[in-house]
Length: 162
Image (cartoon, rainbow, N blue to C red):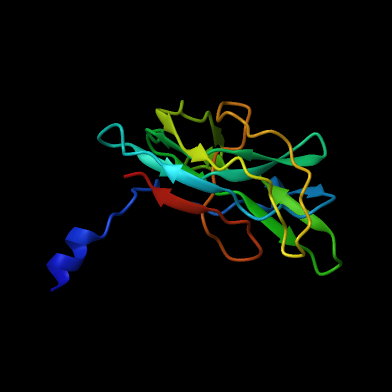
């Protein structure tokens, strides 16, 4: 029975994860909108790992950076994006980023394939349409992904492509 279940389940390989250091947090003036729905393309290459899409703080507004397949840098771990609300009500954010074993920032790998992102308006829990930036192309100057972590993080809903 377990074999049949495992055969039906599809797993998306992820890179090794590491926590964001507190020093990576920057103050922002608004919480991120609800996550975008992404269609995850088939894994294009043996050894590729999936980096989930993430909200990136740019020019005083949130912009979505699409999820993508990459080849993880050797010896590096991915620190997923994080959003936190301090006990004083202040808002803090750190973008997803790659770091080596010493904690030094590593250049992000080039995307091999990117998610298709739902382009519908982003509506918050109160039913109000959020004003957001354009969907960003993943690249060296963008945020690098997301994954669940403890605390108040944004989330997205990846969907496997047929």
